[in-house]
Structure formats: C-alpha cells, structure tokens
Length: 318
Image 1 (cartoon, rainbow, N blue to C red):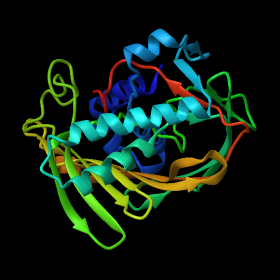
Image 2: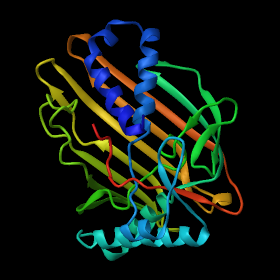
Image 3: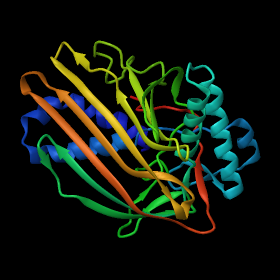
C-alpha cells in the first residue's frame, strides 16, 4: 500500500472512530496517532516526468512496484534545469517581480531532485495533546534497487517513504495567486494558493460532509544569497467544520526545513514538522504533532539519484 493509499485509509478510519478515540486514555490512543502522523508525513506528493523522458528512458521497478529512473550527474543537472524552466514559465502568470520569480524558480528547482543512493538517520518525536512519546531513531540505507532499507531490521520502504528527500512537483501552486509576504536582506517569503485535485471534498472523500471549502496554501521561504529553499510549508488555509457532529479540523500543517548536503551536492530536508488540531464538540479539543529530524545524510559516490515516475501530481489525495 502506497503513501497516498495509507493516508486515505488511515484518515477515513480516524474520522469514523473519532468518538472511540476521544473516549480512551492517552496510552490507548497512541498507536492510532502514530499511524495517522506517519501517513500524513508521507505527503502523497508525486513528481511527474515528461513524455519525452519516458520515451528515452526505460524505468526500473522496485519491490514496492514503484517505477523509477536512475540518474547520473549529467542527467541530474538536466532534470534540475527542467524543473527550473517549468516553474519560471508558470510564474510569468503572477504579478511578482522578475527578481522574485527567479528566486522562487531556483529554490523550487533545488528542493527536489529525486532520492540519492546513500544513507541517513531519522529521529522522530510524536505528541498527543500535552504528552510526548520518547524520541525514536532509525538508520536507513537507500539502495540502487530503488528502496529504503532499515539498517537494523528487515524494514523495506519505497522512494515516497519519509526521508530527507521530500517529493515536490515542479510548480504545485497556483502561480497567479503568488504574493510576497515578508522580505529581508537575506530571505524572502511568498504565499500561494496550493494546486489540488478538483475532486477533493466530494464523492467518498472524508471531507464530503464538511461545510466550507478545503483550501490549501503553500508558503515558500527562500535564501537570496544562494537562491535556495529554506522552508516550504503546506497548510490548511482555514478550519473545516462538520455541523452535524459539532466537530472541526482546525489546523493541518506540514513544514519542511532545508539544508545543503555537501556529499550529495544538493538540498535536503533537515527537519519535517506536522501539526494537526481538531475540535471534537463535547469531547473537547485534540492536537497531534510529529517532529522529524534528519541527520548523517551521506550519498554514495559517484552520485546516483533515483527519480520515481508517477503520472499524477497530488497532495493529500483524500
């Protein structure tokens, strides 16, 4: 089951069982909270490749059934240039200055280049209301067969699993909505409406019975000095309420902080933070957090990047 599928199943189950969850104590709720936060952190962000690339390259397939292309340094640079061109072209629809368009295009081009073969350490802390679980640490190896393998156990995950290399589409935002919200001598922060599938909030969606629109925004903070990403946040713009049960999803936010990794010659997430806050009517409020730090990021030499090839671009596709 992929990240997107896990998110759909986990979130539907959570809302179906919310009364049971709120009626239990903290320790019996922990397994469900852990599951929800883990699948939310997967983001469900899919990077797509062009038809021309698909004709030129024969993709590999990993044990999770994910197709991917193996890229050397030359191919990596070409892919980064393609990402830059796509974002730059889309931003011409905005009212941002040429300087700011250039900054965003460079930052988004550097934010995701696939998953490099190598290793990293993941340390996570999960919290429910005022309680926190002890930190957990795990070492992972990214193999040239296109999967993540736990170094101390037999865990195997796909390329869209939680890692320092978070899959971001080239231009997932609505470019004409872009606004500069903060600027200093070293950084600039922009906000966009976030592009989402048209069928979100309809059909058998878990939000089908919630009033109001499901609106997302994307915040991009970029460094002026090296035209790189510093923070990318994706969040619910306004709360969603369900009048029939007097409940509301008050906050859902994923925030990614970036750093340059010398051995990989690219940017990667140094941390990823998830916040979920809900109002459950008579049962009160509930908040959940997951803070993940990535360290010891090392890339094998010569560099080899693995680019998953999924056709659809979606964020939180419930």
